[in-house]
Image (cartoon, rainbow over all chains, first blue to last red; front, side):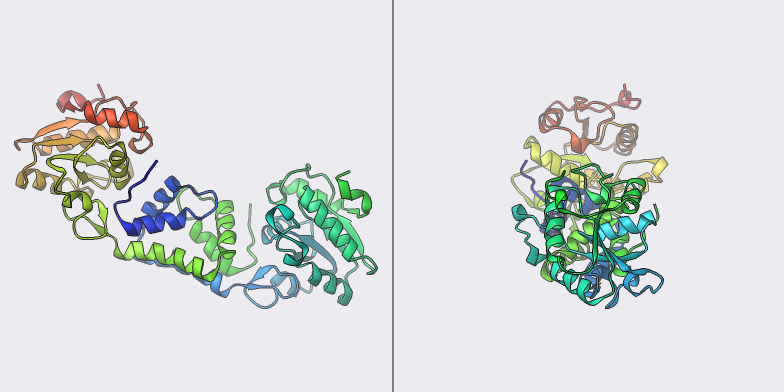
Amino acid sequence: MLQKYPSSLLENAVNEFARLPGVGRKSALRLALHVLRWTNGEVEAFADAITDMKGNVHYCRVCHNICDAEICNICEDKARDAATVCVVESIKDVMAIENTGQFHGLYHVLGGIISPMDGVGPADLQIDSLVQRAKSSPIKEIILALSTTMEGDTTNFYIFRKLAGIDVKISVIARGISVGDELEYTDEITLGRSILNRTEFNESFKYNS
Amino acid sequence: MLQKYPSSLLENAVNEFARLPGVGRKSALRLALHVLRWTNGEVEAFADAITDMKGNVHYCRVCHNICDAEICNICEDKARDAATVCVVESIKDVMAIENTGQFHGLYHVLGGIISPMDGVGPADLQIDSLVQRAKSSPIKEIILALSTTMEGDTTNFYIFRKLAGIDVKISVIARGISVGDELEYTDEITLGRSILNRTEFNESFKYNS
């Protein structure tokens, strides 16, 4: 359907909203017209929150989680177990695991998983920094908590090989999560249990066995 | 579910996204993290498009449609039939009717419909300006094209009474649209036909008969 917009300013805003994931042109128009009904202050607060976030947010130097300072709250928390590091794909996964209340160690956010189809290789991820961390800090165990997909398994195996020779136990979260599911949409009970029931990583995990 | 955000800047952005209609906190987080992956330029373009729209958009002095100047393109178009005015609830309805290609007159955007449940009374709508327009310009026919809901019928009837004594034909779009449906989601064929088959308004329309 060819949409003619009565205003180029409206059309611009619709175009921008339509760039958000899951927002089509019809939804984008609805969002733009909704925003038009906000006060000037509300619209400014909305725009400022987004540009502020983009401009001023930090990524933790240690675990690459999002944070407001150089080092994130979790890495700075002396009460947490610095000997256990949970490797996750994204910030959303850190939040999901934190919500289970089952994990008291630190994290390492890869920023994605190896996916040749999407053009994501090992060099695009925080894998080298994980290896450095395993070498230089007193880490006893690394828990791989990636999605149980082909890409997740590939990434697990790649990390496993990279960590070869370093004296650290490598485990994966229990396969209680059904294969093919995304980590962030798993319920808290299943996700929490999969942290508790983690199993030692070995080569048999390579082919989703 | 209590969500703990690793960054207050992220939390702010999530809160702002969650104010959009149809966006829950989980979607808001997804949108915020998606925006974080944009370049600074892209984020600025997004924020600017929204604040620009809010700050600089005009509402047509004649029909109250959204536009970039004092008078909208439709009102300024001399090729259109200025004797026929179609009364709609919102800008989206103007766009929906324009898309049918069946209407060549002008519009009048009420900015809502009478809805005591939502606290919207006649004074909140552009009804007085419609009456002024009917008195002062060469309007021969006013087509009421509001949603076929209780509120739409009430508004139709209110306008019908307000226009009493003014020499103008009042019609409503044909009830080809199923009762209870929203105007903007009607398919173009039905909506176009309902414009062509409009019928003269009389008091029998009051109770959805």
